[in-house]
Length: 170
Length: 170
Image (cartoon, rainbow over all chains, first blue to last red; front, top):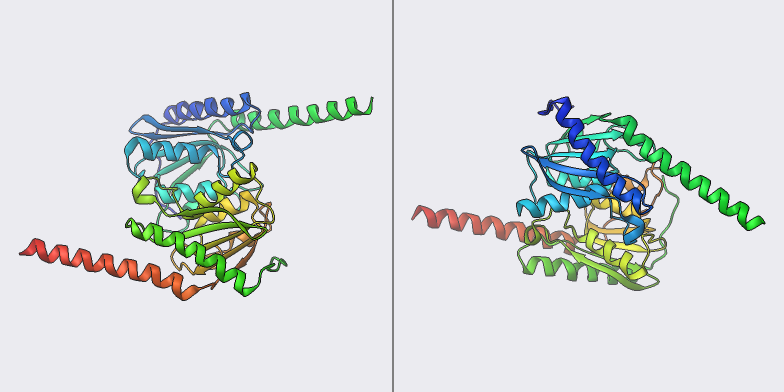
């Protein structure tokens, strides 16, 4: 288990998670699954991103990937040591892996992902000493808000599908 | 364990791994760690990529990511079902995760990665029923050639560093 600790106050964590939520809402606005992320260094956001899988038809177009890439660009450096990453949903294996590769120091997420989360739920790739990096992980930051964004999105999607099905019957 | 089987002959596997090796050599030519990948569908290469981490200063710039993105672009679809991915080195968590997300059917790699490989060595993310996709995995395709590319690259790098150190002493 990692012995790392958080360097942020609760207020800071919630402030940055609100920024990740803003990103998630950008995804929601274009009918993408609402997931957003930001990368923070020394109290400043250096990378932002939201899910664009359907819009781009790119399987790798996850919020965290955009945020990490933009942060690397900002610093002209692939190493994001000392950086914090905030994401509304627990990361998948790809995004957890990108966090290890970019060596982000701390990862904060909102809602857990029981189906594919690999930062504590199915496994914790970010706290496995066999890899060449370990990150501090904290879940449950604005968990309710992050989770409701997703559950509302999927509820509306189901209602739309049902409506469409009923219209086709008429 | 996955019950999937390979749909390719040994000749086909080696032909496509040679294409991944060509990509790895492009990386080597610009002093990047020589790793290359291709994505194949119905006998045609629809995505290619090589490691560009140092050149781009992007932590996510792995060979497999470029190959998967290009394949998605080729098909205008994030789903790469029925596709095969060839890569010279065993994939890391990020790239294994991208393979799960893009739903590639079969993954072939050359050399094992004892330090970070997640397609059989440290774990097998591609054959874990908890995720929503499982891929067929086969290792050891042109293993010697793929491995030597890497070991020669790192040997030359060590020699260069030694030379530089000795020059600085003079």
